[in-house]
Image (cartoon, rainbow over all chains, first blue to last red; front, side, top):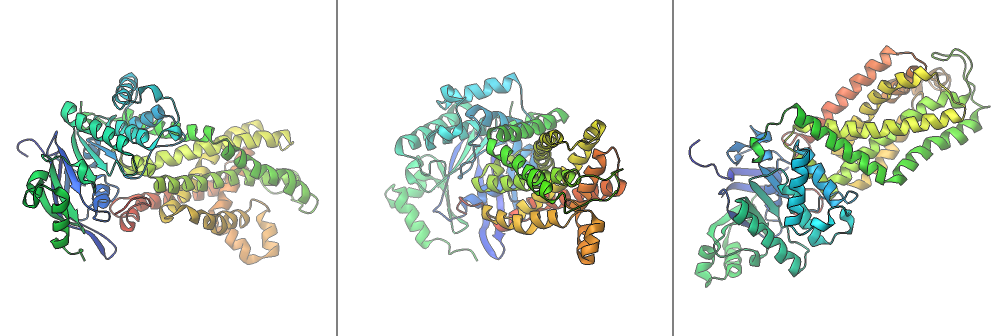
Length: 249
Length: 279
């Protein structure tokens, strides 16, 4: 291997559930320390792609590498570099905010004072330092999401995957979460792949990967993709998905 | 230091195992209703069913008993293992719940091998079950169902092994169940048949008097061996056939569970995204 490895490097990935093919020939690259968006409507295959990248399902074709570690051959190294915020809520409602993060640290083999300090730092960073001993059950949707982001960072991953993290949140919560993640990229050089179907979450300079019916139909900066349509990403997306790939079969 | 630069040695495994056990215990302590219902179920059997049937069901001298025993003395080991059976299935229920709400995914994205994660989850569930069982045995002792004190100690490995077998079976079921509602089927088609078609409530010679077929069903039921293993251990006897059967079944069920949860080969990869997620 030469040069700096990509934070996420997916090549020629296919996936089927039974006879239903949900991903076809996916190539996707996210550079280290960069924010990238995975744009696609509901049902495009974003969550399946995330499930494979987090090894919930193994890829049976193609290759997935995280910071140069092949997910099939070296899952332990690859997963240690990966932080995830799933689309579904995944906090333990019966535990406190801090206990959820301690549990996550333990799942990565981490414990002790340094971890406790890291957890306190991360909770302060997402604005929940005062609420660390409260049960998760009493938090709002936006606060719970911020806890999930803090949790995903406990083991210092260099790649963060977020699967539609703002779904179901109000405008203020969405704005707060976007700001937190953008700051992470700027301050800690964490690479981020942000799956969304909301166009206002993508900045003009962001690398964008457009997924539709299980195929990657466009890639480039948001500005470049939107340029032929007067800079309107939403309009570009509509045009692409109307003329883009038919559903994979 | 980034994640992959960190060595994952034995200490890391210990932390991970300890974390999973700690979470299970915390959840258990917070779910007082779960603890109470786990205790009330066998106590109802002991206080009402066994007391009521005392005069109807006589138990002759069979190993490990050296004298005639009251019916409640006979059923107590079976009820102890029933706690483990319910606990094992309850753990599987929590796995299905975890999968539905997504926290299962958090567990499965740990860098530790999936087999070790499942084993830690299984062992944590068994620890909870064994605590419940000893509380039940202590209450039974107040009800004058007394075993030799050394028997309580020898029963610990027997309870753990039985718990591992039943918990591993629960893990297999949890991988097969797509939704929580299916747990009612597990109650009807797994828990009740396993419990009733075993030596928990009546000795096998009695079963054989009633039905030769049922006798063979009981003999083929791993739950019977768990009950006999615990019953003998409680009286200071190691019953090798039961120990081997229970250990073998535990290994087989756990292997099956690891296969079912394997991201490449198992059922998860063929079924698609958990409920709540779009594909």
